[in-house]
Image (cartoon, rainbow, N blue to C red; front, side, top):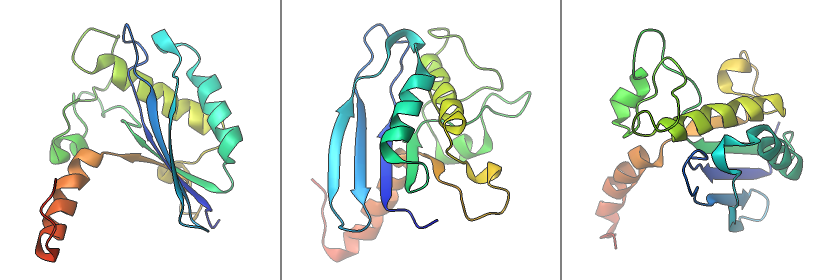
Length: 163
């Protein structure tokens, strides 16, 4: 598969009393044009599967690569944080059991993300772990908070001073 769309999604906590809109960035690989948008997200954890199916239908899982800012899976039992979250220093820590909303910091956000990734897989997206060596993975977890400082360090020698 050669993707024609690269999509970034910045998830929200759908269990929050007033969930914020979800930021979406879509890059057309053919033209290099980017579109930035916001999606209303179902509140109180409602209908993640419908939102994922709508997104899959709009993008087409055969031509889009989707990266979501949120955890894709739980930690291994009995850990309270996956190794990658410890390494990257993420603010939220994904436990080995799906947390109940509002029981700990980031609990609703983690639950939303796990449900969203599950729904995206159900809608036809493939995680790298599920692609089994094929070159067909098109669903990835992203943590921009770990990338931004590295990009900033790389850009410093080129004269960029931030802003």
